[in-house]
Image (tube, rainbow, N blue to C red):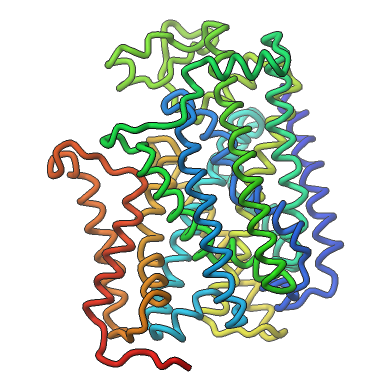
Length: 507
């Protein structure tokens, strides 16, 4: 597609987001920014949270990963569903009963000040890293296919990308995000559906033919029972459940939307509907991934010899770039955009850009708002009133700039699939949150609060070495996402060994 046409698409899209922001942020104050005045319609929150949960990582990486692991990612999604049930019936009632704006205030009341600040810090770290990964993908595509062709450097592309989020989120906060996420989720799902329709048309497949073609291919395999690989069913299911609990239930970003609902009953309805729809949407993206590989194979784009160990190790996907001799290695993340802009019709390019923008910004705009909320409440002591709104705005700008630095660094340092890198790092940074919240909820012990930071930092460090040398130490066993559970368990045990004799009262 012509880069100028793509640029026009981007400008129109963000103009609509800014218009929604102007309408929804009228009369906004700190209560609007932090919890949407607790008046958000549950059905809008549920629908918008699909886009926030999926992100640009899913839009590009999940279809790409189908070539390496087929539909086994769905095992993780089944675990998500179980995790959402825990959130709806254990965590949400707790948060609503305590009338929280920042969920980490719970740690202060239950374990102490040091635990509280440590938990809030790990959220800030986790969200900055995770959201930077997500925005990195969309910046990479916009840079590669639009702005770099106009002579715009990558760092400026990133700055523009983040600046647009700031413009439509700095005033209304979560009150605005609920509506912009609904708008963006609509385009995200439309992007996936229309991509499937257009690619199926290229392959002359109707709906029945499409289902049969994907179902009969090796890409549709879901379950992995071998205990050694990282994508074994039990590893994936349990990891998915705990990833969901920590990355949604213990994450200010995702919970902030739930806490903006009118009451606990509407918040639960939101969670039940969202978790069900999320399974359907992930099946949609996995089907898109299978279709991309089927299309690429039919056009002779991907090397067919996947039994070649050297090929698998050095070049997971061999893409024939126009004008290049032989094979050139590429990450699986690049498959979808490569096909879109080099082989598929221009209409698919239009749909891809819209879907990618929707996916990336639906998760990142709320993250920026949540980071600002957490820092203002947990570290600056803000309340839900109109105090220090100028300071809140400066914090918002500060986190936007932090995103910028992190994305540029990730551009330099990243050398693996973004979907795997995201969850691997989440296993390290969300583990302490899992351990602290679990200890607070499941036990009645008080702890030596000053020990919490040391335990929380030591556990991820130990897990790093455990992951690195597990095959040598554990007879070939390779950790998957279940490392998150071990991390949380270590923190739980560390807190248990620092417990005090007295226990909580039953008040």
